[in-house]
Every structure is written in structure tokens, then in C-alpha cells.
Length: 225
Image (cartoon, rainbow, N blue to C red; front, side, top):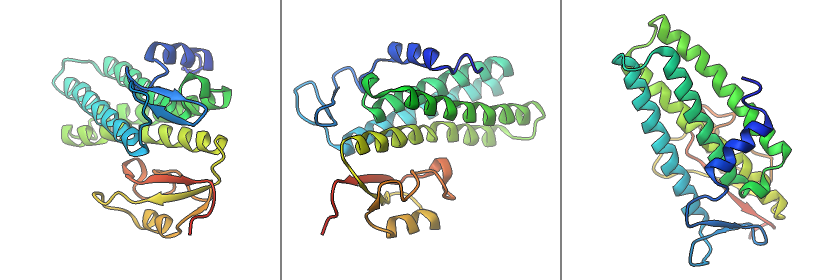
């Protein structure tokens, strides 16, 4: 597993996945923003919506694999291998978007991806053991596997925050999703308003929502009135 998550291995996978967010999108390192095929800048909301779409597709794929395990189409070993591959692809893609493509993926960025994947794989080992020992029902398994898709947002936000810091942003604000239910931790983070970058945890960290967190972040270069 350690060899599989080495920076060289992750880089090889990322090249295959492409450094661009989308077939028609590219990253402009001068401005720190993404451009569409027509050259126009993409809004942060557009990029975040695309990440959400990919998270939803990953969730659907993971649920399909878990359903195949439940009906006997896949063995537990096959399920683990395919789930691990899906998780790895999803986190690499999210990290590429967050960090601004291949050019933003330095050794530290690859280290963060490797660390997060090792954590996810460790949780997956426990999940597989629970499945083997029949401690979870099929509905419970389908719900639980979705958390692995939700955790992908963490790779995006971590990379984005570091990229924005390199662009000169020094302040941040947690934004609540009006369509989601929020834990008291997230409500407290949002109520803090604009604070120094790094003063608040990333969405999904140090909150009861965990991987289900739907908060976003806005970045500022100077204190707003």
C-alpha cells in the first residue's frame, strides 16, 4: 500500500486523469482562477458545483460496487480493490482542482493526498471487516459507503486554501449551505465571520458533520467592511 501511495505513483495516476478540471477548462496561474474554453473566468460557485457533481458520481459508483458485493457479483476482495481505486481517483482529481492542476502539485501536496488516502484505506479495512462479520445490513452499507465520496471535498478544500494563500489571500470565512442541516460546530465557525486564514478548520474537519459537511469557504486579501 505504501508503494502505491508514493508521490511518483500518485503523479503517474494524476497525469492519466489530466491536470485540467474539465476537458474544456484550464487553470490560469497568473490570476489563480479557472477559465472556460472561451477564455472567460469561471466563478468559484461553478467550480464548487462541479466538485459536488463529481462527488455525487463517485457516490453513485461506490454504491453500485457495494450493491454488487451484496448480490454476490463481486467478492469482498474485488470490492475492496475497486473501491480503493475509485477513492484514489476521486481524491487525486479533487486535489488537482484545489491546487490548480499539475503545476500546483508540489511534494507537500502529494504528501497530503497520500496521507488522506492512507486514512481512507484504513477506514475501509474496518468497513470490510464489518461486512465480513455481517455487522452491517445492506442499507447500512450503502449509506456508509457514501461517506467515502463525501470525504473527497476535503482534498479540494485543503488544496484550494493553500493555493489561495499563495495568491496572497490572508483571510477566510466559512459559508453555510442554506440547503443543508448544520451541526453546532459549523454554525459557530460561520458566526466567527472573516478571520485569519487557517484560524478555522476546513469543511468536514473538527465538526460533528464530518464528511457530510456542506460548508464552503470564501477567501479575502484584506478585511472587508
